[in-house]
Image 1: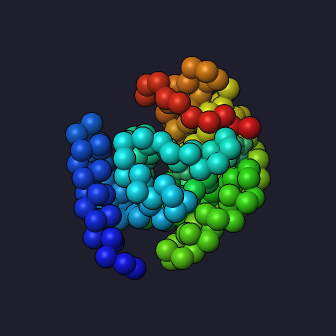
Image 2: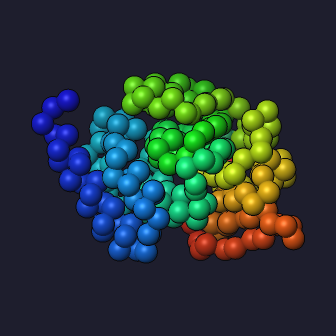
Length: 210
Ligand code: SAH
């Protein structure tokens, strides 16, 4: 790589301190992963200089790479463990998939758009992620063959909680997803011994889960 590699490392350190730690993200596995994963490589060339700025960026029609803080909030809220098996809905650029690959044991990720999936598969393979499995398909249905999951992360907003995903959540499992149409809330669902517990994490803006 060229001489700009170092400046990207500095930008990542600044992103972690100023955008994540300053806003209360404390999960060290999330902070470490976000220092390591080269977010700029998941973006088209012309957007790479913007990669570490404090905002979402466009990937294509109906697709965005989320703001770093929102990605971190979702990962931290899922309370991920090293041994977890995780399902992601909406691979998109593959950036959050890579972060999951750094933090947990196995990642399954489903993306509706096959062209986008081909691109993220290439990036993830080039970066050497071997614990990530990708599939083109409809995320509303999850990935039942590999269920149950310790955590499920949905990166597009559903107008209602997808029933099939709830079924694929292990006992003690956590699901983080944006729910709503124009007004969306980030929701944490947990399968407890008593049933399904739900916690509101605040307003968000995601593209729709189609
Ligand atoms: N986590 C991604 C965010 C991508 S935006 C990243 O870090 O880049 C949301 C993604 O969800 C888009 O790529 C979109 O194509 C995908 N998507 C929308 N509806 C879907 C569905 N029903 N099943 C699977 N993926 C879907």
